[in-house]
Image (cartoon, rainbow, N blue to C red; front, side, top):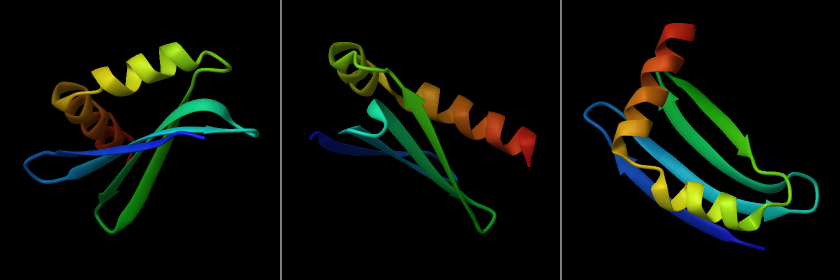
Length: 76
């Protein structure tokens, strides 16, 4: 089971990125952000494609985290 983590620090928010693998959700990346007192967690699934999930985790960067925060704020 993989359990890699990284924190992307933005101006107003930190974004926790986790690379996870388990029997229920298979290969996936989880992004967690605390905004306005609400803990928001999103999961990006890759099915059984371990290599693609590893690449997605490695490539997840500040630009993507910024866009993710922007999109979440638009939904709140």
